[in-house]
Length: 344
Ligand SMILES: NC(=O)c1ccc[n+]([C@@H]2O[C@H](COP(=O)([O-])OP(=O)(O)OC[C@H]3O[C@@H](n4cnc5c(N)ncnc54)[C@H](OP(=O)(O)O)[C@@H]3O)[C@@H](O)[C@H]2O)c1
Image (cartoon, rainbow, N blue to C red; front, side):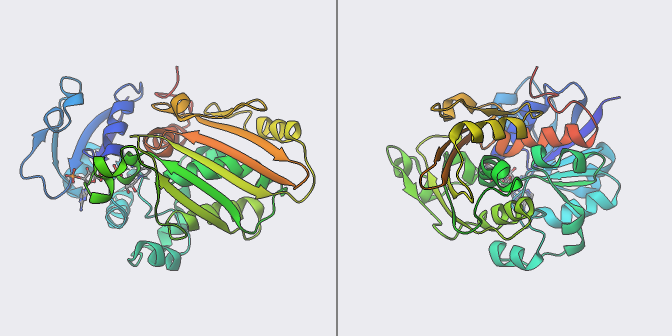
């Protein structure tokens, strides 16, 4: 029997990408799609998102948990942070599974959530229950779980780039430099002067320098891997393109290491992960190689004299950084092949 899925926030960039992926998934049927409270009346989803016309005949309605519950087995929340938290808990408490793509269940410490998202967390007990859905690191924990906190797009690229070095305790933990450039869909569909076409076309600009809400998420997960506190210096940039994140990480090494040893370590670490591709020495990831796929490509070189690793990753922010990874997590939750709906 097909699993019935609902997508809340279906009209946003992530919601639309989820629909696109799930339409081709052999084990699911999309049975509910919602938009914000601003939707004046129900509209066919194909009218709101013309790319879907003739491919999904469902009406999109204003988010209403009671109405959704009888229609679904699993719900994807592609909602703004702070909006997700009460909705996620209501759905889980009704016995349904939730994959939350917002930041509401990613940080384990509620005081950090309040500091970075400027709102109290109403369900701190669920922060412990939620599993952080960076699939490659947490496959086993995700199977059977009720609530997955899907990672942020920048954290996905940065953590996958650094995980093998921290997991093997080879990296120094202080002031890890992460420099990440994202396409404009990373900021969502809501228009702003910062994202206005003339402001970004032909331009490259940094933003939220030393002040981006994904810093604590990256630090939390790297610290978990290293089993000691890791701190990062994270600078995001806005690229004049629609999708993709290219991340460059600079991290000190505790001991001297050569590039070929590092590449071998990464190949071994990700040997069972179909969506992580490690480049050979001297070859580097590019956005064009990963856009509209669920891959994370990683290239690495070592400056052996200075004992520094330089690691570059590339992902599509809407796929591996959001909807694709969420479907990977759906597959793991159900014990299905992780590649289902994502790779032939
Ligand atoms: N964009 C990315 O690359 C990316 C990557 C990873 C994670 N995320 C996270 O995924 C979530 C969705 O991101 P997005 O980029 O798709 O955002 P978006 O384009 O702004 O879409 C937000 C969606 O939520 C709906 N919505 C907004 N406020 C709502 C409310 N109060 N009640 C009910 N529905 C509401 C919107 O409906 P209307 O269309 O009717 O306003 C829309 O469907 C965010 O938490 C974001 O941080 C995004």
